[in-house]
Image (cartoon, rainbow, N blue to C red; front, side):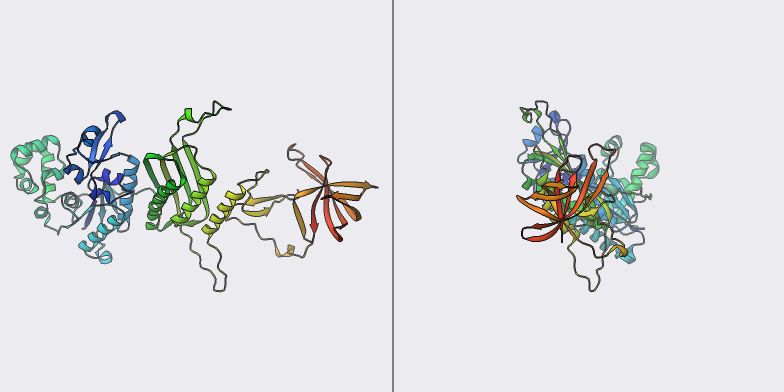
Length: 514
């Protein structure tokens, strides 16, 4: 039997300092919680305790202790940090327990052949947690409770050999066991201050005076308890949050914060060999309605949430490309007020592996192509007057309506036509938009035409071909007569497509045949 325990001391402080983990050991930090009118210290690190900060102090009392960095407690930050600890342990074994905030137990029984000795596994756990930005204690023992108490009481790495639990834990104070207050007071009056003293008491008299809870504490002090871990199945939620002390107004410093959150989310995805093709950004804005009222619309309101969504054609693990796409998205749709809180959620999918052919030319990476298309959208706009995307892949629609097509987003391409239809056809060079024209009819056929400030005679005419559709929709109804005209235009003979809109009676030159 082999169990490991990762314990992050002063976990609320470490969770609040995920953006700068080095500050945990270098700066005096205290975490406050409670209503705004009565904030109290709920956690602090060693430098803050050395400066005189204690649990239960008010914000004013903590500020009087000197240069103390005060952070407000955010439960979402602690949940995110706990998920990051679970991800660190998940590399070693799926049999793990989220015991408490900052405490993770893992069952490593039978893993020595793969991962090495208990000391080597403990060093690997310690290194993995430190790489994720945590300052932790790691303990290895033959039962989970002994590993937990050793991690709480000893610094860095502790390895307890089987049968040596009582001797190793003996020097730890009683507070490591977290006894009930009434039992702690009785042990204090008895002069019991460490686990060795508690373990040496006779069992029967101890049980008579303290009952079963006292006997259980003695077994914990001796390292004799055995229990099953409560398995933790962490949900695949990759959400990173950040609440800012001061609101951010400019996009450049906002991009710096987004980069940090994306790096954390991508790190957790890579640890599980996952990627993402869907990113949701939610910005909480600092809105003051009286400052956003407009003269022309006094009832105008500004929402306090600004949400943007990225959907990629292929999964990616590259945080830099995602950051660039978010920057382009925010440049096109900037928030209307300073940002107070940032939340990024990436949705996991399996990574996509592509093996190119030996003689196949290299194509641009899909994510880089998406960045290029996003830049084009920022220049030409998102949609045209007919509601079609301006940037994407054109696809003809299954309709008899002329010039009927849709623009598909990246990652979607039109189906290839059957080989039987791939025949040599006369190409029509379309004019977008079609050129307005004036046509003179003679005996039911166009005789002369004027467009682009030039008037010319029609040499030959073919038509008309009448097309109509969408009669059930008054706004979408179309009727037109099409003609193919041979014109002597600009000193050369050309074949043109001309049509008359029967609803408006206007003529247009739609294109020229190549």
